[in-house]
Structure formats: structure tokens, C-alpha cells
Amino acid sequence: MGNADKPDLKDVKVGVIGAGTWGTAIASLLAGKGLSVALWAFEEEVKHEIETLGENKTFLPGMPLPKNITPSNDLSDVASNKDVLVLVVPSHIFRNMAMQVAEFAGPETKIVSASKGIELETDLTMHGILQQAMPKVPDGNLAVISGPTFAKEVVSNVPSVAAVASSSLETAEFLQQVFATPFFRVYTNTDVIGVELGGAVKNVIAIASGIVDGMGFGLNTRAAIITRGLAEITRLGARMGAAPDTFSGITGVGDLILTCTGTLSRNYTVGRKLGEGMKLSEILAEMKMVAEGVKNAESIYNLSKRLGVEMPITFEVYNILYKDSPPADAVGRLMTRDLKPEKEEY
Image (cartoon, rainbow, N blue to C red; front, side):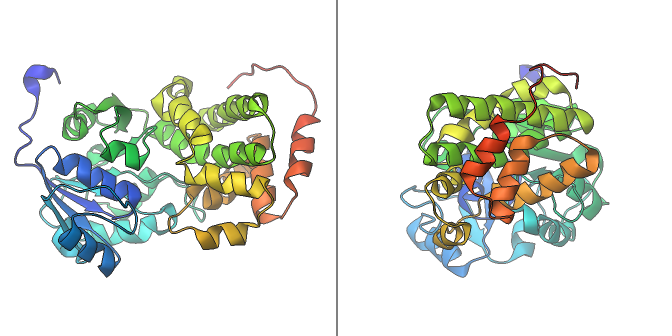
């Protein structure tokens, strides 16, 4: 689709399912372009805040929102008669929400996952869940959007990039036009599994990065976590049929660097507090929002074991989170593993 083929977006109707931090940011991004955006919020107080204050004080405080966002607690109002539906809910409730949304989505509706994760019970990505939960929607109308995008910065018009991936290049190109703004540059991709795995696994690696920072180690250690974490993501992706070069792009190394170094990252923050000696239960009790890496450490650990993929950093994060292993012991095990070549066949 060249510039001459740009679609007329003024009549595109969008429903965003999930009014957490990222869902609100996506609604703001699209409404800022003048699109008609309906936003489903689970919490009545969030709907009320957006309606009366023009702000989601619960999840995105201090960020004024465009007036053409219509918040609702009624899923049928938000999901019915839309051209594009964006699902932005935590991965552990994604299937339930997708099944509910499927009642209102037509075969022509473009369905976009903006959630990052692996389902614990099935080892499926969010795109895989959509394929099961929405059998009436052709696979070519399903897509995912991912990238190094902190919500607060996107809403603040900080220049950012993301990728939208679909098995249909035509769908990816249409959604590229829907999401792109002068501050939010969008690239297309057809490697759906690669884009999704980069977004899911980097949250686990970000917890590891936070842990070593919280323990007081230096920048050498953080760089080691990022680069060897990327090797783990690439190894898993290759086993699952992803294109290895996807992980050198914005949804791989780009998202990994952001999440492993940015203090706005919930996953990095969880890791840092663990490294400082806090217990996981105490950390989670303080948080309003979901740190996807906590749940995905378990699902990715199980997936890698099933597929026989070696992911030592992921394994140690799992041990710290679910086996109460001391972080210092985990670092010791990582540093004294059998020596081996850096490069390997994927």
C-alpha cells in the first residue's frame, strides 16, 4: 500500500477493550487523530473519571485525554459495529475477554491484540488465543501491535515506534495507517509469532535486569542480562518458527532495551525491589497494575521445558519468583554454568 493508497480514516470506528495504562494510551493516540473511539473500562470509577475529569486518574494520572473518547462499562456498546477492536487486557484474562468480544465482532472487523504474554494453560500467544476464541474472524483480520512504548510517553507525544503484525500484509498496512501519527511511527511485519514472543519474553528478562540492579551490580551485569536474554528470546523464537531477524528489530531488542533499563517499566521495578530484598507478595500488594513478567515467567518456563529450549535467565527468574530462590544464588548458578561458544545455531 503506497502513499497514494492511504485509506480514508475519518469514518473508522474503533473500540478499545481495557482502560488500564496502555489501553488508555492507545485510546488517546487514536482519538487524538480524530477517530471515534469507544473505551471499555472494567471499573466504574475509571469510566466516571474519564467522563467527568477527562483523565484516567486511576491508571494514567496527570494525562489529559481527548474529548472524543467515549468510556463505557458496557462491553456490547464498545465492541458492536466497530471497524477495529483493540484488546488491551492482562494476558491471564485475555481468553475470557476475547470470547466475550467475539459475540460482537463481525467477519470484517480487524481484531488487534495489544497485550503481551503466553497463556499458562495452553502455551498460546494472544494471537493464538484470538484464533481459537474468534473462529468467525478470518486469520487475515487478526493482528498484534507491539514495541518499545511506555504509555505515559506515548500520551505525551514523545516520538515512539511500534510494529503491527498480521498474516495479511494488507491488514497490517491498513492498521499501520490507523495507528500512525507524527509522534508514533508504525512499521508492518508478517512475523506474528516473532513479534509476540519478543514482547512476552522481554518482560521476564526485565525482571532479571531489575534484580541485578537492585543487588547493586554495575552496568556490565545489566548489559550481560540484556544480550544473553536476547539470545534466549531468539532461541525460543527459532524453535517456534519465528524469523530470527525479527528479534534484532523494534519488537525484539528495541522493546528489550526499553523494558530492561526504563524505570517506568513495571517488570523492571518488580525485579529491582526483589534485588533489594523485598518479598514478591509485598511488591505485588503495592501495585495497581499488572507486571506481566511475573505470570509469564511461569508460562515461558513451562513452554521452554516442553520444547526443550535452554533459557537459563528465564529459569532463574522463575526460581526466584516461584521457588523463593535467593537472587545471589541465582546469579552464582548463571555465572558458573558450563562454558560454551557465544554463537549457536538457531
